[in-house]
Image (tube, rainbow, N blue to C red; front, top):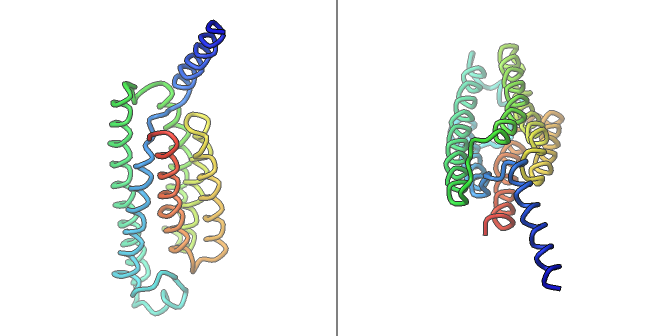
Length: 211
C-alpha cells in the first residue's frame, strides 16, 4: 500500500514538472485585478473630463463638437488608453516576475517566448487595424476592435498558460462584437471588458493558483 502511495505521488510530481515545462505559469492574478482597476479609472476619467459626464458616446455628441473636435477627442482617448495599457503591462510584468521569483521559476523561457508570440501577433494586428480606422475616420470601430483582438489574443495564447484565460478571451470577443453592434455603448462595454472582467478573472486566478 505504501509503494502504491509513493507511485501516485511520483506521478503527481512528474505531471507538475511536465506542466511547468510546457505552460507559462507566472501570470499573476493580482495583475488582472490592478489592470481592471486601471481600466475603470481610465473610463471614469474619460467620462468626466472628455465626455461631459457621459459613458455613452452617441453620434449627436460628436456632432455637437466644434470643427476638429472629434479628431481631438479621439486622440485624447487613444492617449488615455495607451497610458492605461502601459500601467497595466508594467504592473503585470512586475507582479509576474515577483511570482516567478518566489516560486524559483525563470520568467524568460522558451514557453514564455511562445506565449508572448501567440499573444502579441493578434494584438499587433489589431493595433494596425485601429490605426487604419483612425486614419479613415471610422472612430466607432476603435473600441470594438480593441476588445475583439484582445480577446482573440488571449484565446490564441491559451495553450501556453492557464486554460482559464480561454474563457476570458471569449467573453472579451463577445463584448467587442456587442460594441460593434451598439457603438454608443462602446465605452461602457470597454470598461466592462477591460475593467470588471479583469478584476473577476484576477480574483479567480488568485484564489485558484496563488493562495
